[in-house]
Length: 329
Image 1 (spheres, rainbow, N blue to C red):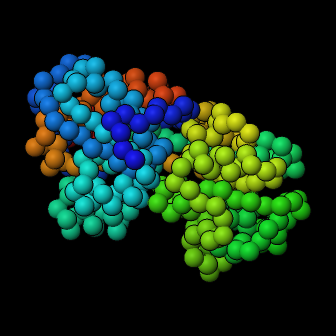
Image 2: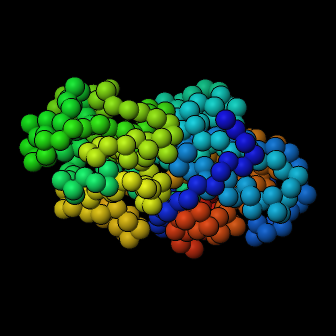
Image 3: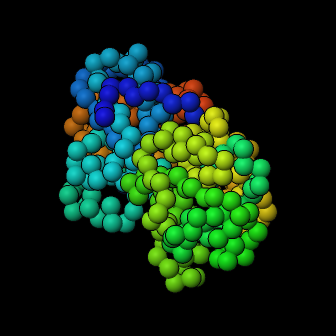
């Protein structure tokens, strides 16, 4: 479902001072540099993609409406992968993404003549969760997660079944798993960070077990994790931090058990973290003054105000300047 402004999710995630650049084409000169006034442009902007980044884009759109109500902005969040399918088919103006564009997706964009600019907007951690009543597990290693969620775990019904794969000491307790589906950037990032290397070592495909409960809706995943005492799941930290009925597990990526929180994700200590982006169709921005003005606003007022207002930590001034330079190129 699309709407002009999707519900603003309560978010708490972390943005650090990194800057990645890609693509080409900058903003339109018709708008002001500070993002606080409008050239009077009109038109429509359609944004699709990551459900994690959608609340940021939604808040930017709300703030932008106060500056220019003649630009109609629609935001939806079906998932990063689904968003890139639309974007590379020329169906959207901006693609929200909780991972970088894949080579195959970039090739599709190129084949379809879609030129784009990649703009870093933040950093998010992926939270690994269980039910708040599960006192038997406090920390999981990457090996544990592979043994619980990886392809070799298919058919297992107890946390303890993972011990034969991971060499860990997980409890003999029922296991129900809830997580994002394959359309999600959170799924892709979790596979890349946690599963891929271990699967390669084991001669297995880099994917999850097929027999878990996938959903494109983060709130559905959280409801599932809260549904019984010994569940397991993963979602973006932004959605996980203050969710009812669940608790975040510490994660050991090789350097000891580390909690997921603002400080550890910002410092890079927490081992399951990923950058967040928006991708802008450069040719559409050159033709659509309303789109160019919206992105000008996004990389100024959006990064300065909107990110913090939805609960994320804003980029440093240096990183904001890098994102602005990427757009203005």
